[in-house]
Image (tube, rainbow over all chains, first blue to last red; front, side):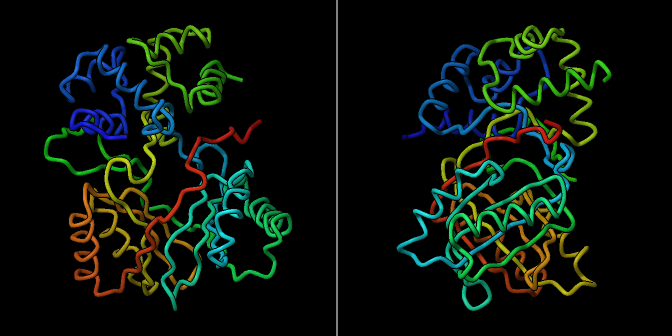
Length: 171
Length: 152
């Protein structure tokens, strides 16, 4: 989908967060140069086109009871990684699943999954289940539990035309 | 269960996606949850203040609005807090975690274009004197769709 400059401003506003006021679409529309009804119509269209994955309450997993999370990475042969990635994404506890460029020798892995659970044992069990059900036991793999979270918030795409409406929610 | 806690569970259970695209979305959410617009807005302010809520907003798939990358550094333990603070200080950095690995600091940076992203990564390299490994996305199999509340 080809995005207009107005669409981009509107999306950047929506990604940064709606103001917690009774008419939030009027506010982000105004910042993008649109009326409230135009902003709502554009967001509907952008959501249908897949330019918005979801619009809603974006909560931090830790505060929601998910105390443990691991980034797990495997080195999967190029010809097999897409089919395995698609199957991996279907597990409910896999919250993100991406293929990324390898950076050998320090980082030989290409398939990434983010796994959240109520504690470390739960997450470890979920990783074992993935390895078993997708027959990945033989693949080189790294499990990186998180220790400290220094920052977690939505992306800000620096754009001189965009006025950010919400403050950085780093933690 | 307290009234606020119960309302907060209903809102989080129901509105991690499909925020009503109507002029007064919080009033609509309040109606669906047996509450009032004022109560919903006050509660969202509280969840924002205590860190539960990152924002009420949109998740945009990677690549739609600009370019981004996952990146990692191997930081000596004694320098980790300082380097982490330096990395977090860039507005282009949206996630920054310590993880259990020789590559112990992991962050995601996003910018409007490749040149702007390179400037941030080069700046971090220069100021820390450390190698920054870039692991750009090649394909998304699954993008964040929200969490089932863990209390269910």
